[in-house]
Length: 65
Image (cartoon, rainbow, N blue to C red; front, side):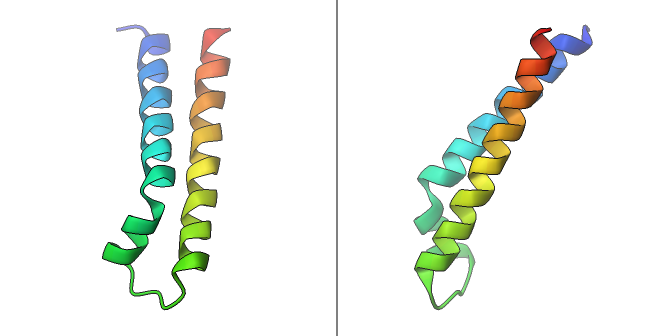
């Protein structure tokens, strides 16, 4: 299989998981972590999701060249 196809799929899956993390951040913090302040936990999870989204998009961008 071609490496470009595999990297495109990996980048898309990373970006998809990041979007799901951003969308469900408050629910994830409430269910998984026992953090007293939900706002700070949600903010941290959304920042992690945004970074992962950027990484996935950069993988896909450099893969197209």
